[in-house]
Length: 182
Image 1: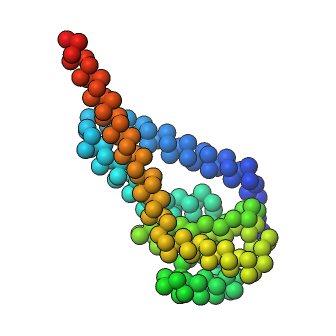
Image 2 (image 1 turned 45 degrees about the horizontal axis):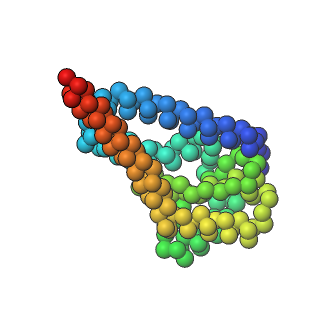
Image 3 (image 1 turned 180 degrees about the horizontal axis):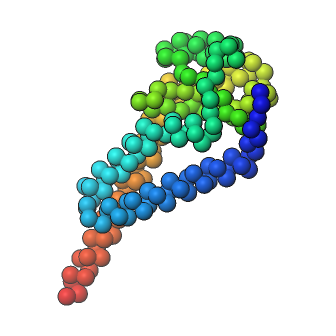
């Protein structure tokens, strides 16, 4: 397996840069739009933005981590394990992806549009035995079975909604205070 040389520091910097860009763009867009749409519009916009991000997040992850789908002929035992674990969990077999990263890691991801996938890093495949990798794969398939991606979408949407409500209350109180002073 040829590695493209992701280091832990490089991975962290990529994640920080991506997160900063998402926050900056969304803050700019929300600031422009929220000046005129009020509380209900703000909540609807926050929900729509989070739903959109949830739907496209698999594509962002594939690009950010340079994931490529693992063909059965490359690592047949990994495909066999994924099929067995998915069948045992009552799920459709997720797509398997390889990340060219030396740090041992794995993660599950997906959305209703994309479907579900499990990514493993080159470092994980080099560091752990087949049995240990199968255990990690089982853990990641457990995330899919328990719909953890859905839970995380809700967990990220709620702060956005509360922020919109807080902003509306703050602006309303400032406006009301200005009216009282007249």
